[in-house]
Amino acid sequence: MDINPIKALVDLVDRGITERGSAQILRERLGLAADKYDALATKAEQLEAENTSLKAELKREKEAADRLRAKLGADRDRRNEDEEKILMFLAETGGFHPGHRLIQRLGLNPTKGEYYLGELSKANLIQTPMMGVMGTPMSYAIAHPGRGYLIKHDLIK
Image (cartoon, rainbow, N blue to C red; front, side, top):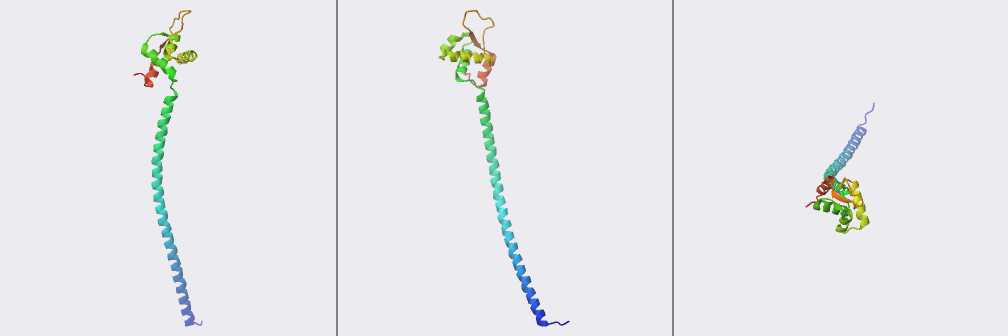
């Protein structure tokens, strides 16, 4: 086996250059990976902060939506303004009142007034006397649920 010292030296230098070059490339790649990791860590922190902020905003919006739903629910079971006028009048004056006088006193359209009296009666918010007299106008008084309605909706002063 012939050992050529120059060839061995060239191989040694060549291997050193190759290994040094590979090490440099690896060092550069590791540096790039570290830079990318730092950038990703910074981005993750930013996204976590944004996520926390968005969760807080979502919570506030859900609470606002719940308040609106509650208000809409409360408004949804409200009677119209003229029906509430009838209930308040009957509550304030007490006793039975003939329907036509009640409608006239509140300045309601007679057809609408009769309709509202019928709706309030069907809803058991107002009542008629147990024994009506034939040939006399129907009279109305507030019923217990009608008082409850006025109280629930804060319509009684």
